[in-house]
Length: 168
Length: 168
DNA sequence: AAGTTATGAATGAATG
DNA sequence: CATTCATTCATAACTT
Image 1 (tube, each protein chain N blue to C red):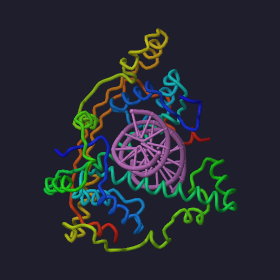
Image 2: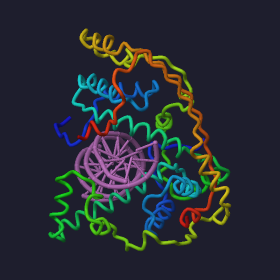
Image 3: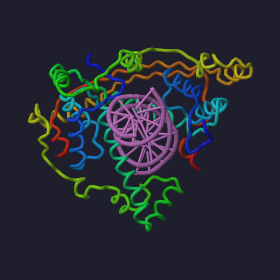
Image 4: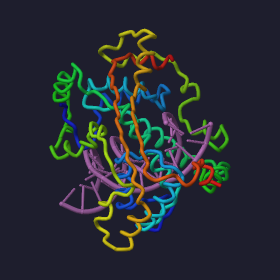
């Protein structure tokens, strides 16, 4: 990792902690939380509070985007489409099973979980057994936060004429 | 389920339609436009909404990139302005409007072009009422989220506007 | 088969 | 919170 500090490049550990926090239900951390998170994550590398702020903003927004864009590809013309693709060139359809499985991102139904956790899950420390870190986490973040999160979203797939969008 | 490849590889027909849409002036389709485009293009092959989204993002960005480099070479007068943008690390929004418009290779009116594109073989002529559009719009945001948060520890500080503290 | 290019995908950083 | 822009990473496709 070069010292090209044009923009923040989170380390794997930082991403892991942030992701854990997000998965735990944290969405819009307060200034106070942001500073604490940033302070702790600075152990793993350079980081500023605004990075944490932006990270949550982006992650939340993109989860919503993904949700909104989640689609379909499950329509009646699907079979016909496949036939069509095979008739044409489509050497591009070299799909490997592992690739398919790798596309399974977060199970969306897992968002319905009700979870109790600490602000900093202990498994974030799995690779770092330094007593100092442990003390940090256990002391500074003793406040137990219980998130009960139920997300229900509706997806829809209307087949609309594109022109409607153009004229509006 | 449809086969999902490691990475979307658009068919020639898909690229043609996307390019035509781009050339007709479409730059940043809205979410519902993306949905419709993706839905239509699924006739030609596997495709997801995010593919359409990324395609337009990339195509626009790379056209701009190309043009910016060109301007940088061909028109030394603009060097100062571009240099200014890069020095201040600000987006091109901050620059003069004529500069932004000069980024577009396509004539300006192309952005507002209203055109009936007979690009799709099927279902292209289905009409939808305004009420259906409205229903779709409202459903799109019918994201029922129940979020119950219990914080064991008490907040010490009032919640401040993060942006104010970060960017001052 | 290695190296290069084109481009899909991702994400940090904004702006309003 | 939405949307957008910029850079960058990753890799399919192409070139040699």
